[in-house]
Image (cartoon, helix red, strand yellow):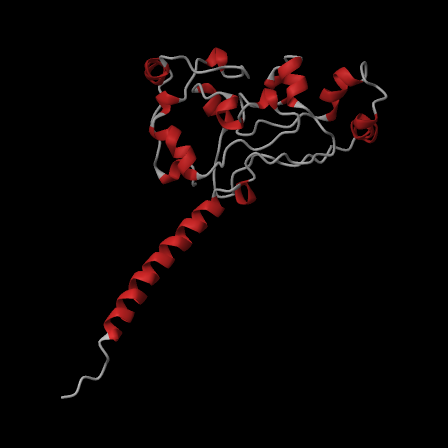
Length: 216
């Protein structure tokens, strides 16, 4: 019986198969790169705000404690945003005529909250509680990055599930004493693992990785 296909067909078939595998792998790699890029995650992208509030100035230079503005962070799932009255505690006395603070004065005068642009947020199907993380020794800068260096706030972490699980699987790498949770200049000591293991025991930290921990 005569051969139906030419010998070169075998080569074409092999090249097609290997080419398809390589193309799929390449597309997967490109998709992963894009998914982790600032274009998707907004990491390191400063968000424009109605008032150019500088954490660098207020926290880094003036030493304002995180809890002064985010007053519910220790008792609530939400850290809370400061009402305009909090801003005016100082700005009714200093920089009272600054042009950049006009929206703050208007908000206070008209009793209308400022519409801040959200920088850090998890999807609606994810439950996150600030108070429990604070109580277990997770510092503000662990998630929010070098906040004391930010003139305009940007997102420091992707907040992807795998990023959260890095800490949930090995909390000893990240925990700090509760007294240092709100220290914007805290740096991990050389014996972080030893300290972390002690805090895991002392604070009764559990490695919660079950789906229902965050997806309720």
